[in-house]
Image (tube, rainbow, N blue to C red):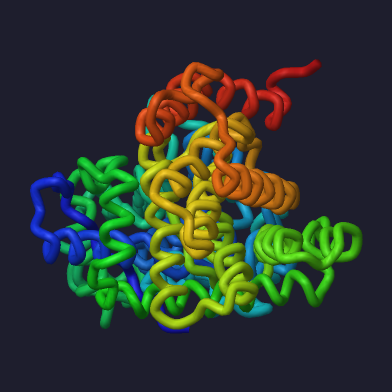
Length: 468
């Protein structure tokens, strides 16, 4: 698998752009979001940080210190690390990344891990004190800090806000892009050859502030639909096609073989074989496989493979049913992705709000659009979805994510069916507001602010700090 790292999108107000500038900006946004990842993005981000630390250190670490935000600990605790032989948890991701990870592959860092790396990881995990993990408070919800020690030296790597956003990368306090074989001395192996350019790029990325949560100011559903219906999507065509290819493959794997709780297989066996059931099953099956350590890569959205799968598989399923393919299918997928990104931008990278709801909104909007729905009906689909399942909590990455995907897609399809029939939830009913944009912002506030304490209490329950 060839890794292609997305490019950052400058924060601009899309309402001030010409149609050509808008199209380029939205294609850039899609390309920056639709990057490849192997397994759940949180353990992979830990492995990536550890692989970078090993690279900068220049030898196998004698010990590791790993500090993480609560949301990273929550999302890594119960999910299987890919290519690990079934291991779970922050310690396993960090040690395996430090021993066998490829720092140049970012979120595919564990693709080349071998049996020897797994065996060595198991040996080191059995050594008391080799890898110490601590909770760091007062940092962004997505934060990882690795300290790798050997021969009196220490390499430090920190990732913040986004899974590949390296904000610190040093050896003995010296920035990585200033290191060279001569500077390392003779007491550690020379692993710098061919990596100086990588280190320079990593450090350059860390020199700038993390991207804002809302990458394009002024983005609205109408602007997204203008782009989808009449804009030039050619700049994102490769990324969209890759999303369909990769995420369809892992979905098929989850349907054919026994992965996780087999939510996708259960749906097909018990709920019939209509298009709505197939859409739910195909989306859930991709998560079944991914959460259980399947080593197939996925194209992520909003930093999440589950959201990337949820945006893609229901759209692909309905497109097959409706006989839609080619350019119109890619435009529908772009609509799904951009709606998910738009909704999620109000919430932030990680929270107690289950992100597959945002992806479900995108899938439902795209399904209604493919069925010929008006702009009002596409917007009503989003409102109906948020008014239904907007309160699903995220209690970490694990097998039950597939069931939450099924629920989100089911709500989105119901929301689209209601919108097509002229039915829906009205302003003043709960957090539903007067417009689709106000409702998105309202739900975003609940996820970002209202559920902050919920996030803390979920982590306490998961770690045993709170006992019932």
